[in-house]
Structure formats: C-alpha cells, structure tokens
Length: 354
Image 1 (tube, rainbow, N blue to C red):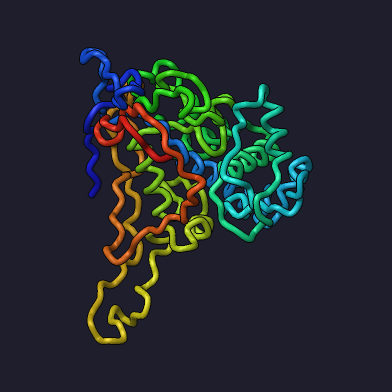
Image 2 (image 1 turned 30 degrees about the vertical axis):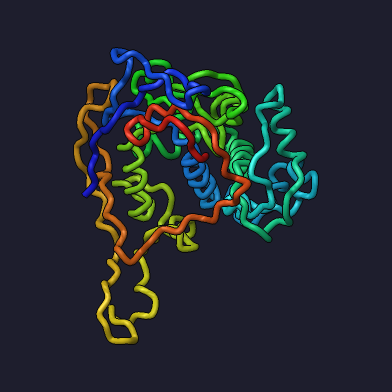
C-alpha cells in the first residue's frame, strides 16, 4: 500500500537571510499548505523521462544504442568526442565532466556550441561521472531525429498516453498556486540572481535553455509519478498503453539499481529454492509486482472530470533488496543556502546538497 497524504507547507518562505542563516517567512495568510496535487520541480528526475524517450527511439530504430552521437550530430564530434556513443550518454560514461555554466552563454546557439566544444574529462567508456551534459546531448539527438522539441515528445510519448495531466515542462502561470517553491536564488550560492524561484525551473542551465532541457525542467505531482513508477514496475505497460517494451525496461534496470526488473527479481544470491547453502531458510523473492489495474481517480485538477488511470500504489521492495545509487563524486556535491517551501514539511531552510 502507498500513503498519499499532504504534509507541511508548499510555500512558506519568501527569502533567505544570510546574516541570521534563517528563512524569512511569508505572512501566514500568504503561505500555501501542501496538497495531494501539489506540483514539484522534479530536478534530475527529469533525466528519467529523457531516458525513456531515448529508449523509445531506440525501439523504433531511429537511434542506435551503440551508435556514435556524432553520427546524428556531426558537430558533437569536436574536441575528441567522435567516439562517444548513445549508451555512454545514458549511462554517464561518456567522459563529460559533471557540469559547466551554460547559463553564462548569451544565446541558445552559443550554449549548444559550448556543449559541442566541451573536451572530455576521461576517455569514453572508462569512468562513471554523473553529468547533466549527457542528457542535454541526448536531448539534442532526440530533437534532431524526431523533428520535435523535447517538451512535445514528453507530452505526446509519455504524459498523454499515461494520463499524466500534471506533468510537463514550463507549467503555466495558472498552476503557480499549486506549485511548491524551491529556492531563494541569489549569488554567490546561485549562478543567477532570480530571487524566490517558484513556478519556474530551479536549475540555472535548464532555466537558461528556456525551461526545456534533457537533464532538468519537468514538473509533476505525486500521483503522476506513482503512475509512471507503476508503469515501469509493470514492464512499461499501463492498461492498454505501453511505454516502452518490457525488454527495454529490463535493459534500463540492469546494474542492480532497480528493486526488480520487468521480469521480477532473481532469487537471493547463494540460495536454492529459498534455502541458502547453510540450510537456514530465507525469504523467497516475489515473482513480479501485481498487474496495473484500472481504477477511477477523483476529479482531475482544473478539469472537473474523472478519468481512468493506472492504479499507482507500488509494492515495496523485499527486505533483502536495497537500491544502490551510483557513487557520488565529491566534485558533484555543492552546498548552498535554500528556501525550500517543500520537503521536510517546508522546513528546509539552511543548507542542502544538490
């Protein structure tokens, strides 16, 4: 079972006070409590959507998993990147460094040129380094081969088929009262002086790219994310819709970073029939999460209609399983003051790690 209950405040602080290292609260009547349909800036969870869109194009034969990125974007091959593959972008093994300040470039074309001119920190395929440049590059490939912007791809290939009506890039102004605030963005802890970031993407590079970027920029609520999670746990299927194929979901989940793949988890290591070599019984791994069932959701926000969508609550992983994220390089972690209106019940003022 999954609990879907709002806690805390979506918007509580108006600014960060450097001298006292505290948040400056809004007047009580201007604070906004959390709701079940509060929309959040998903930050790097946006990368998952870009990855799914890439896998879809791989399934359709428009993109090759082992193909050089430069075969689609010849200018990408500059500065020694001619051998970087699509797989290496997806797995953060391209050799890109973690981050560059694209927002300092004056135009969109100049930002793209800086990606193309970027030299690699390590030879392709030799080291793992989590980098937003991988997913920005992947965005450029997807937009080139499909002729559609990334936000259009997201809508047409993922959110509309799954009925995710509260998931999109660049939410309209009418959504703002339902969006959680993120940060008081000011130099030196932020690359840009923007004040309270609320209703716009927080990531500076994504913001400078017009709010639509492969690494950041998607907004969504808890229900929609549960629908997507349920879909992936069911092998890419939601009712009669499928994005992507089960074998593609399994490919995405290889490497021990998913609780189970589309075919369910293997038996615990060193067991046979649920009993280890020493003879002591162990918990048998479940076969596969129960199928997604169609149910009626309450009135959709702003539509006044009821819609049939996949039942989102997802079963918890077995106790013997743990999700191990990729190692984080110390160069990737930066601390900065924050005026989060959400997370921890809206009390997240102080320091946070991005």
